[in-house]
Amino acid sequence: MKLSARCLLPAFATLGLALPAQAQPAMWEVRDDDSAIWLFGSFHVLPEGTAWRTELFDTLLADADRIVFETDIRPAAAAQVGAEAYMRGVYTDGTLLTDVLGETIETQLRAKAADIDMPMGMVQAMKPWLAANTITVQAMAGKGFAADGVELLLLPDLPEERLGFLETGSEQLEVLAGASDEEQVAMLVATLDQLDTLPKVMDKMLRSWMSGTPDQLSDAFITGMGGYEAGFLERLLYARNRNWIAPIETMLADNSENLIVVGAAHLIGDSNVLELLEQAGYAVERIQ
Image (cartoon, rainbow, N blue to C red; front, side):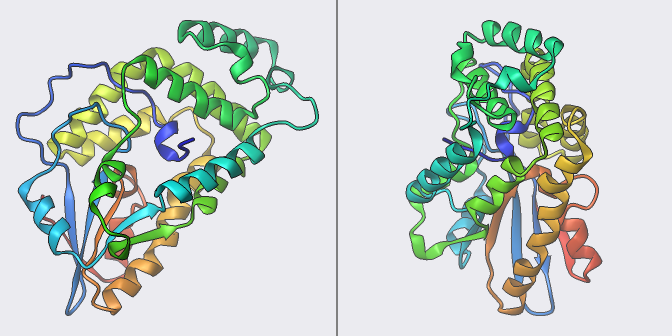
């Protein structure tokens, strides 16, 4: 079970996208007086065979002291988080998902489930946050997408001693499982509302990411997240951005020249990681 912010972004584009001939996803260098780190905004779900790596990226990947991801995605860690997600994401008292939804939302859920060929029994025991995740993954599979993004594509070639992580899987899971009942229902409704526009929105996001146009990516992301509660977005993006500044500053203080790979949404828009680092006095320069 793969759980993270990736499963809450709107949509998964149709196959056969006309992507830029020369992909250059955005990348930045952050410096203090005597060292540097590099931040690369990743895309967590990619069409199979997408050519996104550049010569500069591969050079930094080879030269960096460590490669730092948001969280540990190695198989053992992923299995542990998957088990925890199941424990926290299903009702154990006989409650059904449709018991916590109003009639209008239930009708919408049943219609959308039919559209993506998903049996209702698949989600009936789930809490709304896990149902939203499951529906998104089901819709993705229907579009022929693998759930592997940048990090999972890089992982097989990285020895464990070169890996680092900004947060634990349990901390990332808390973003979803820790949502209030109201936030969870809003999350599910937003997911259902976006299913019909998945190809169009994701097409724009993927094109913007591949062509290295963060402003356009930010606009598409904000549009796609418009149905989510402010409290959820605070936990999903802004609080995590703030939490990551201290470990990044430690890397710079220790002269650890690391390549940090995090979801592109954390490097765009208001209060993003780059903006916070600039406010803390570090020099930030876009290098790709």
